[in-house]
Amino acid sequence: MELNDETLRDGLQSPSVRDPGIEEKKALLHCMDGLGIEAADIGLPGAGPRANEAARTLAVEIARTNLSIKPNCAARTVISDIEPIARIQQAAGIPLEVATFIGSSPVRQYAEDWNIDQILQHTHRAVSYAAGEGLDVMYVTEDTTRSRPRTLDKLFRTAIEAGAKRICLADTVGHATPRGVRQLVRFARGVAAATEEPVLVDWHGHRDRGLGLANALAAIEEGVSRVHATALGIGERVGNTEMDLMLVNLYLLGVRSRPLTRLDEYCRLASEMCGVEIGPAYPVVGRDAFRTGTGVHAAAIIKAMKKGDSWLQDLVYSGVPASLVGREQQVEVSPVSGLSNVRFWLEVNGYDSDDDHLCQAVFGLAKRTDHALTDEEIEAELAAVGAEPSE
Image 1 (cartoon, helix red, strand yellow):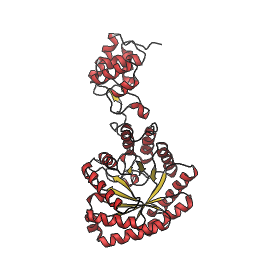
Image 2 (image 1 turned 30 degrees about the vertical axis):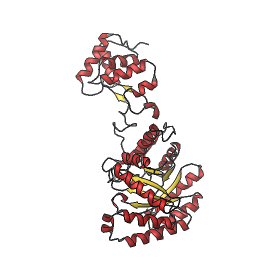
Image 3 (image 1 turned 60 degrees about the vertical axis):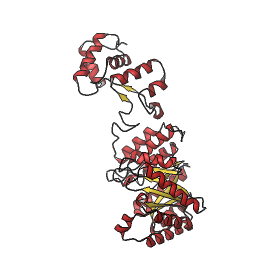
Image 4 (image 1 turned 180 degrees about the vertical axis):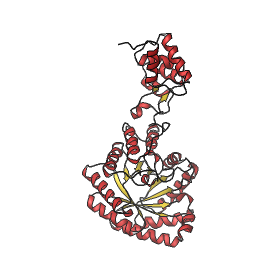
């Protein structure tokens, strides 16, 4: 099962991100490769000169540095979008996949004044042209999850007959539920199998209803060959499936075994280059992911630490091991802490953790405040009572 990173194309459609410079895009591409992500959408060259040049530069970078990641570019089902992708493939000297998309749902047909015959004509013409130019073709039905089965059957068969090697099911507006995803994937795989061609099925989901990750996992369990996602889930409206969380879940499920030590770097790079803040409660890479100031939780973690068992301390109050992404459990002192938190902080920071006077001073401060104490606040309180850390 493979992953396709859409951060540098679909992710940049978010109205709240900035389009990064080309060196930043290269850096993220290398980070994707380091995480073992198999493919990346490097842009929509037909969008204009800037997008065209960026896609060309990234394709050349992949070839020049011999990255393992496979590039693809998005295109509408029009030859004017596909032709520049063929030129980029020639310039880079490596295979390039084209993801050619068209709306397939009744609501899109009504809004665009399309009929099924027009969509079929566009599909056949675009896929045939792309295949004739030596491009691998992924045919994407936009708004698949709100499309009629008989329409999808006709479109998939037409695209496959014209040379498509993949069909992509797109939950463009985050409409689907996991049960619906399973049924759709089963249907699409059945259509592909009936053509007797070696066609693969992709899943591309959005998270308008907060189901992006759950839907992607359901698609994987139902047998898709590749899932699309973006760093931190950035993308149009409320975004896409989160690539970082996909990687973590697939590792924990035993589907993928590539180490995730670069995951934090990947997320922080995407955050900085796109101008998207990582919230403190964001899973795995957020500031609070492995912090606790709660007395009961901290007491259990501290006991595990004192046993010298890194595995136990990572799991006793965490569903994701901090060490998986190169982080550690953090025990803090807050208004909901117990004395175990205080003693632990004193010990770690070189103070006498058995001194009840010091413990009560810090404990009292914690109970008078409305937030987790900083090291500076605790040290100031200890200085006020004349305490100093041991050498």
